[in-house]
Image (cartoon, rainbow, N blue to C red; front, side):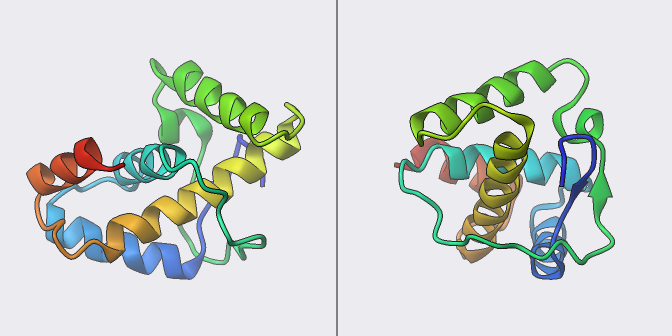
Length: 128
C-alpha cells in the first residue's frame, strides 16, 4: 500500500458500514480521518503487524486527507514514525497509516457509546 492508494480490509469496511449507519456520517474518508487521529493519539504500539487490504473500499490520498489538510496528516504520520524509531520513508509512513487507520477503526467500532456524531466527538476529545 502506498499513500497514493489507501485500501481497507474487509473487517474494517464492515466496521465502517456500522459506524456510518449509527453516526450518520456518510463518507468513508471522514470516519477514516477520525480513526487515524484516535489511534495516533494512543502512545502504545499497535499489536497488528500484517493487514490484508481485501475490501472494495479504496481512496486516494487527497480524498482521504482532503486537499487542504493533507500536509497535516502527513506530518502526523511522520511524527509517529519518528517517535517509534522508524525511517521516514514512504514504506514506513504507508505502513504506519495502514496500521493506525485499522486500529482506529477498531477503536471507534468497539466503542458502544459512539452512536451519533456528537458522541464520536466527545469520545475523541476525552480519549486518553
